[in-house]
Image (cartoon, rainbow, N blue to C red; front, side, top):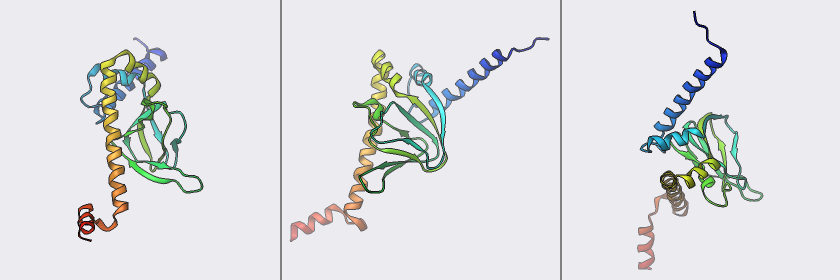
Amino acid sequence: MKTQLPIQSSARELKGKHKQLKALIEAHPFVQGLGLSHAATLAECAMKTEFAPGQLIFREGDIANRFYVILEGKVALQARSQGASPVLIETIGPGEVLGWSWLFEPCTWHFDARAVEPTKAIFFYGTWLREQCEKDRVFGCELYKRVSLVVIDRLQSARRRLLELSYPGGTSTEHLLLNHLHN
């Protein structure tokens, strides 16, 4: 009869957990279609994490050295101004990416991020990933493209919200322009 040593058992458990983590990473919309070797690079610097409702994930102005892909739950991005309550910028949920500031100088957060409900995510070490982007330019280019798409999507979302606030009640800009031209 062969008995397992605790170390052998732990190594097998770790390998199984790593495979599960890698599968979660590969299934996330942000990573889908990325080459297997590049997905493996992401898995090397990743770990599962959870946040309780109300938990601060990062604060505006702090060093940005990580990012997350959201598996479950919701996270609020908030902007702060002196003497005022935080303003909700956007809510991020499953299938989305939280944090892109780690990739662009000066690598500081531009917003606060706070869990709205119990949230499960995968944490990635951004500092290490930036180094990998320098070493493997193809990986770097692909990662920059994907993060740029997230940034563009967030900017367009902010633009839509600003227009909604500027023209409440669904007043279209075309209608306002025509009224201005006729007056």
